[in-house]
Length: 196
Image (tube, rainbow, N blue to C red; front, side):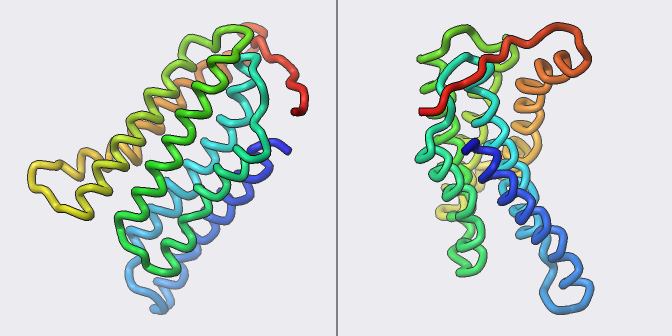
């Protein structure tokens, strides 16, 4: 089993729910769903897809070992926590705690593969830990602010880091290699992985 096989379907569910909220709002069944829509579309859909793609592609780009079943399920559980947080209305800080834990896990995943690599990843691929670290720090700052509001903490700027900037960094880190390979500019060095 590959990570994308668990995380992509979950991402599709997040996207479907996130979009359908606007239909329920238009029918007058729910209040304005701006916040929860943003949570389902970015930390839900987008980060879940990024996690699935990253956990599948990173080991191949580095010639390292594939994601273990337990790692896939940990990522799936962390990604899936958005639903119970929303259904049980656990509070704003739990949304950001979930994102922080997911990014911390992805940082662990990257470096556990990097240590056992057979070759160096593409140059821009090294931006991924930076993107995950910014995601972790942004999520932690927003979680802190939701528990202890601070005037000095510029939450609008931090939300931009979390919802927009890290996505750009991650696309640059993976897309630079992927787009070059798709356009035939070079043959990517991809290693077939063995099952554990």
